[in-house]
Amino acid sequence: MTSFNSFQTTRYRKKTACLSDLDSKIADLRYKVSAFRFSTLLRKFDPEQPRDEQGRWTDGTGTAATLNPLNAFASFGNSAACNAQYSKDLFQCKMTGNPQCYAQAMVRFVACENGGQIPPLNY
Image (cartoon, rainbow, N blue to C red; front, side, top):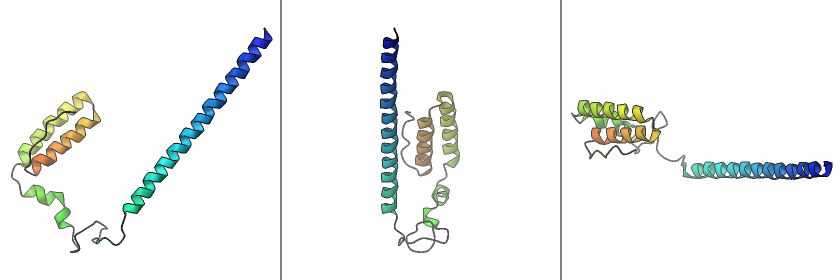
């Protein structure tokens, strides 16, 4: 009877050793993927890009006024309608609790503010 228990114990130890080996390999792969993503981001950064006083990218004029989305929103007169639509979308998103719904609601809000075609709320 003891030989059977020792066999099970040995088998259990081999399985746990195998699982811990897999865990360490998975952690190693996750580290390598995150290091690759970080190096990709570093390659995309160009310190020679023109920037304003606050560090934001500009077109070289020294001001980021053209990049400010609030300036674009001010040119359209439908912000009340867009806010109402966004409130309705948020209500639906709160009912579903889906994070993708909130992202789609923001996409719809921005499209409305820019005067573009409003995509459907299909989360």
